[in-house]
Image 1 (tube, rainbow, N blue to C red):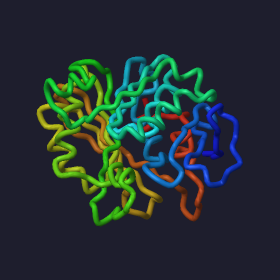
Image 2 (cartoon, rainbow, N blue to C red):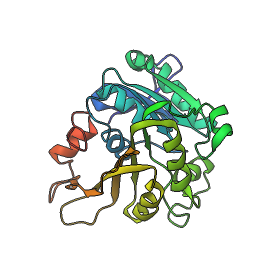
Image 3 (spheres, one colour):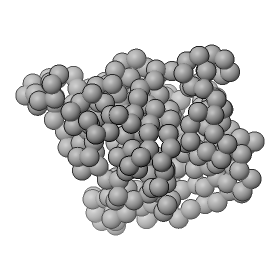
Image 4 (tube, rainbow, N blue to C red):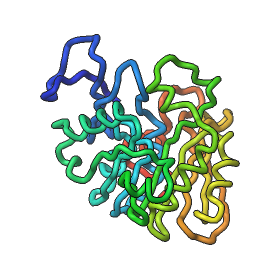
Length: 271
């Protein structure tokens, strides 16, 4: 991922104190305008989440907690007819998503994406009035704030909102996903392994045929992330997938599979 700082017209800025950066993903197929020293900066988590969407996906995906739009844009960059709604509750981060879509580097993708400022924890009529209508999407993916407050103590309010988990978070987010996704539509969640139990509890009665894929730094290290993919109203059981190892032994570089996933050349579940 490369980084430089753009001005309002997309030309590189030379001011090292700029409050935002322009970062390339998928080897330059799309770029993010994102905060430099505040809020959430997207990276490998967003790319792995996006890679949970099947490669032949052609519908509309809702990216809950989209930030500057990394996961949503990664889906539509890889899936040539897909569309994305970038759902973000923080107006400051939603503005970065709008700047991302408006940037000249993203002209070819911008027509297939939109930004929606909405609180995904809303239910019923308030959720619909916020723009999240029932049965509106073919797939929902989410990278919710999954860190305990003790893990991510920070004075930055934007960063805290993006990283620190509230009580009942997975129940609220997955409840909304079940409402807005179409029957037989998909769901993908990335989180820490410690969050597996509340995720599975929230899936119960809503999503089935869940597949859990653990992500390890290396083969000799414990998993640091899980990606859970499930299908609305499906009745299939739970399966544990072969893990993804981000790095080969003794190497700081991505493994070939992780590199392909990071750059939009492979899907996480092999489809």
